[in-house]
Length: 372
Image 1 (tube, rainbow, N blue to C red):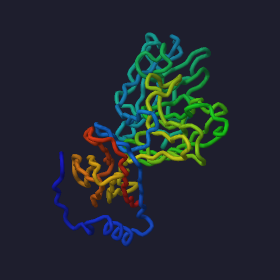
Image 2: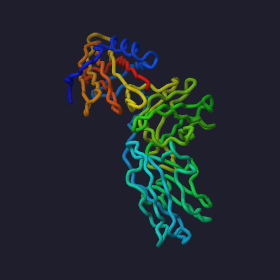
Image 3: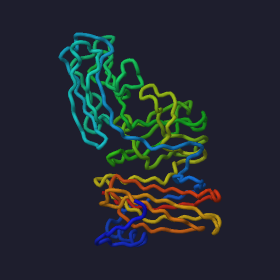
């Protein structure tokens, strides 16, 4: 909807200032302020406010996959045998299924599930998340992935190698894979650790890391203490310990899972000479972790005669659909939007100038999170 008209009962605040005071009074240091400031060059089209460098940034998807099971060699040793798998759907529902090898030809793909998002490494280890009831025979490999995975390595989401009954953790993938690399090989950046804080589709906050290799253009996969990242959805913060010589991206190879050779779909960037990603997009975590409150949005341009349009999209707590506020600005302005946000919803800021004059819009946003 365009604009909003909401009735809220019992709200103890009506501006950012009173919201801040209320949450600090009730929750103390559990009320954490998140501040954003960026100068965005406006264009004729609405552009999301963020540091992009020279790149196009995309949103990660979360479409569930249909997975199948097969061996690359037909062998009677697998007859009547099974593989037990534990995974998450894109709603964060943990599931367990048992797939049976095809008894006629184990190279034939058999169904595993139709709602796969990532492997459940919260409750299981790499040694228990996928288990074959028979060890893979010498010279064989057992794959779980999308149709065509035996011939196409880029479609494999898990591999059990010969003599094993479970996969090595680095062969496990999900819909939410994410990698990093530097724009150009930069000796001074070798060994720098990139830290990625993100929210997965069901609103859980995680922190992952990757280390720039001896050739910093080498693609590195983000990892967690429990394994590799397979559930990335929205970035909260991407940082490194010191300014970079060239930009570093968090991204994927859109055409491949295994065998990633080119990062061509970018999710976040730390720009050259910077040490963090600067982006306005905010995804509210699940209620079990934090509550999010939109507060104040402030905009200005170099001259009071500059005109541009700010578009804010957000979803108040308890609402099923988002609200869109379109605000025409002459020079500068400020909006108080003191709303508690619906868990798993997103706040988006965009600017455009109607092609009148491309101006630098100074955009600031304040959000408060209450840690549960």
